[in-house]
Image (cartoon, rainbow, N blue to C red; front, side, top):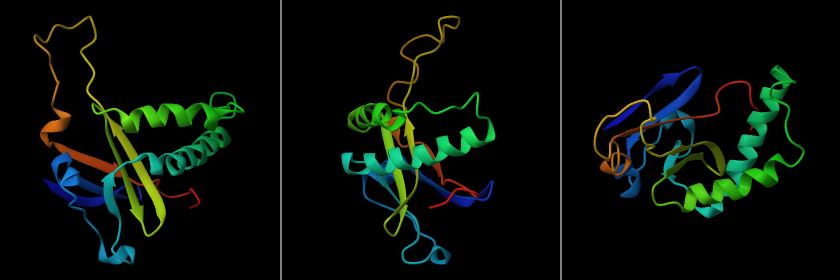
Length: 145
């Protein structure tokens, strides 16, 4: 499955996990160059992911300083966690880039049902590996590159 559209002012690129793992990408002629390219994240992407998340935390803090106050060592704490996500075979970690710029990222994993529910069996295991649609949204309007 593949889809493209606009949501909240950001570009949305939809592809299946199988498409990404097979190296198929999507681009937009109006985005310049080859347009946004969706790929599986690697450890080389972690620094850019951490930087993009730091920009988002800065915007959150500006909007609500008490609730979203950043820790002084937020990036130092975030990088090791990001590395574990990218390296974990049970996590789908994707990035979207335009030229050399990281435009967005997404991590997806299946978690079990909360203990107050009993769906039966090992619900959800393997669903992310099965190639269902994945939607990645860029950082949207209002955040500097």
